[in-house]
Amino acid sequence: MAFVEYRHGDGRVFGFAAIPPRSSAILDSKEFRRAFGQIAQYDEGLQRRVLTLDGPPLRSPVKLSPAAAGDTPIRSLSFGPYVLPSKVWASVTPVVLDRHLKRRPEEEAREMIAVACERAGLPRPATSKIRVGKHSAVMGAPPSRPPAGAPHWSSWRVPKPFASRPLVHVAIDFEDEVEGPVLLGAGRFTGLGLFRGARLER
Image (tube, rainbow, N blue to C red; front, side):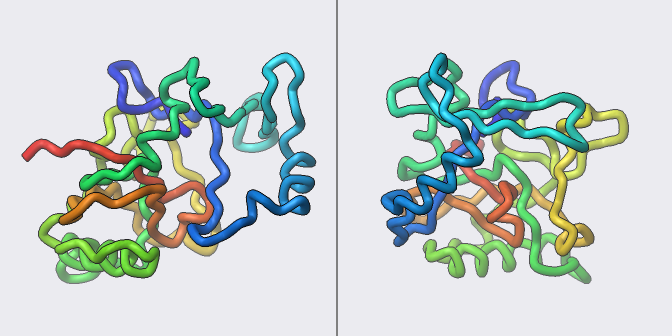
């Protein structure tokens, strides 16, 4: 969960969330809780679990913790914008498209996003209500392809099977409100294609 949608937001990751499949009861599973406890140890001082990330490309260990309900010292850790119903959803992390774009790149990308919504069990939006581009509609989210000289943490590490596929930021205006979380694209199981409720300038 990144520091975005605020004046000084710069896209740095401040915390994490575990998002189970919509119809899953995995969070009630003792086996899942035991496995999760192995990778995210409980910190008595913070009174919450902490996940420590280390190794390349990180220059030093990064500690992440989930936000507890009603406990949001860092507002970017609030999970409301990621789950509450909204008509408009915008990507915080770029979407990995299914294939390369050819003759009509923007039109093809919008169609791929519409199909991705259907696959995710969401209503299919009108392609005219889908915006794609390099930059996110969410303030502070780094572009889909950071320019040369950008901070090292602003580069997206795409899993090898998808490394050659195009990345785009997306904003979708659904006809009716849609409940989150919204995750789209081939990288949705690795943190890419994560959306949050947003407002678009008309």
